Length: 156
Image (cartoon, rainbow, N blue to C red):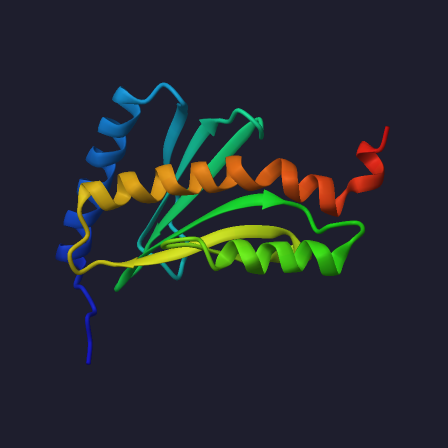
């Protein structure tokens, strides 16, 4: 039943993720900063990857190492002010097309993209895929979601 990793195994994952992210930053100028922050009491370690966006100014991806999974998330935008049914329908339709992530509602009804990877078989290419996918998903959805959820702010 248990895929629970011990402290020694988690320390290895932590070092590998540090190395993988440093390598990713060295070849990707979109990445502005990577920080290995203080651990959440419920998790072993936490990182953030801050990237310069094209449609959204900045995209920050959080990676959190647990005892079984690597969780990842990024903040997309605040709760919509209007057209809430259309906005939520748009999110659900987008969820159907996403691989490895899903839109969710978090604190203050803000919109996030989240997902998890099992630590079994965690490899560098998966971390790269996760960071790149979250970046791409936010870039693709940001303006259309703003146009729906904040339409009156952008009316001519």
